[in-house]
Length: 206
Image (cartoon, rainbow, N blue to C red; front, top):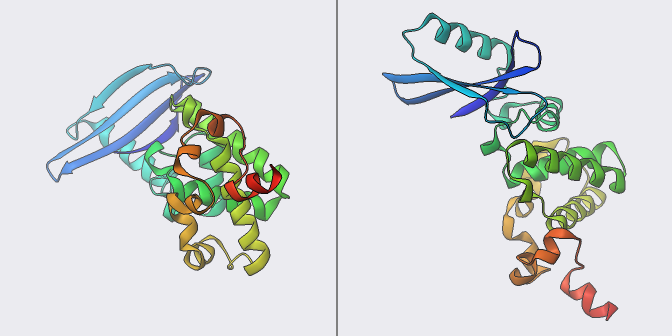
C-alpha cells in the first residue's frame, strides 16, 4: 500500500490516506487519523470501499495534490527532501537507496559536517515518526556519507541524482561497507550508537 499525508480540515489532525489494489475488483482506501503532536499515536483507522463517494473524493484529491509522493523515483529532489523531512515519505520507500539519495542531496547543498547533521536529524525524526526509534545507525550513516563525499570530490555530481546513481551503483548496495568493516562490527551496539573507525584506520591508530 502506498501512503501519503493529507491535512485534515480539523485542526491538529493529520489524515494519512492510501490506496490498496490487490486486484481490479478489490480496492479500498485506508485512512488513519492521528494527532500531529504525537508521532506514536495510533489514532483511528477507517477503511473506505470504492462504493463510497468519499473513496473517489480522497482518491482524486490524493492524485491531484500529491502526484509524485507515491513513488520516490518520480519525485524531484526538492519534493523528496520535503517528504523525508516532514515524515510524509512512505516508510517502505525509505530504503537504502533513499538514504544515499538524501546524503547526496545534502552534500550538494552544504559542507560535510552540516550535511551529516541534517541527514542524522532527518533519519532520526523519520524513524520516530514510524515507530522505529532504533533505525538510526551512526557508523553506517557517517561512513556512507563519507563515501558519497569522496565520489563527489573525485567524479563530480553526475549532473543530478539519477546520473550519480548510475555512475556509482556500488553505493546502492547495503554491503558496500564490508570492504571496510567486518559484519560483526557493523552489527554491534557500539557501531550503532557512535561512529567506529574502519578496520584499516583503526589498526593504524592503535
